[in-house]
Length: 300
Image 1 (cartoon, rainbow, N blue to C red):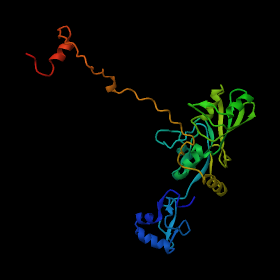
Image 2 (image 1 turned 120 degrees about the vertical axis):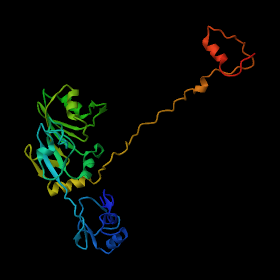
Image 3 (image 1 turned 90 degrees about the vertical axis):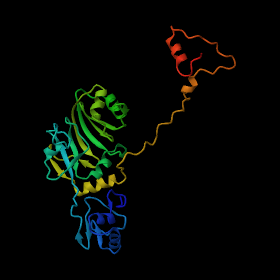
């Protein structure tokens, strides 16, 4: 992704906003090679993110630049993947107790365990989570009764849950009571709901892989991404979108329904030719009496 496509502020506007110089002066300094962005000479139009480092004449001017943090964390059961440290005692933030502000990418329910990413880079979150980006997540699942070939086949072909059909996925039996499943979507409690549809109850659910990153730390522990993992991750995300793409098969427009008759169409037709016979008002018909006496002059 070029720096023209990234999220951020155009570099001339950035230098103006931090009070360093005007936009016009910033453009001149960029053209003369006096400005660097993350160690390279930018072009007019390049954008500056909150973690980028901007130097002018060799001096750092982006004092608040932050380094990206990417952690591989093995979430234990009982920990809730929320940043609500005030309302949830067993929250993931307090459990890790990292010295800088971080947050989880995605969720694992309280009863589940395994791999979850922790980061301070909000730009990357939706690229990983959006279902249409087709990023794989792998799980090991144990259930309460013996697994059948029919169960494995039906789980892989899509299951009706939550008013929709899950995507086809890879499912492989690993023992009489366990299987491995690879998903490219993340519906709420998806695997548990899929199993429940066929009369199975999940006893243990562990996420072991997200995209190219495999779980390799003990429960409750975390580590930084390696340089290789981070490079591979960025390559996988290069074509990913942060926003939801429009459906490739939008619903067809329904045939236009015939218009309902309007209020005026319900009115009785006007008389054509023959005059209506005069009907004397009667005290037994208050509506008729009211109609004859309202409006207009009384006849003498």
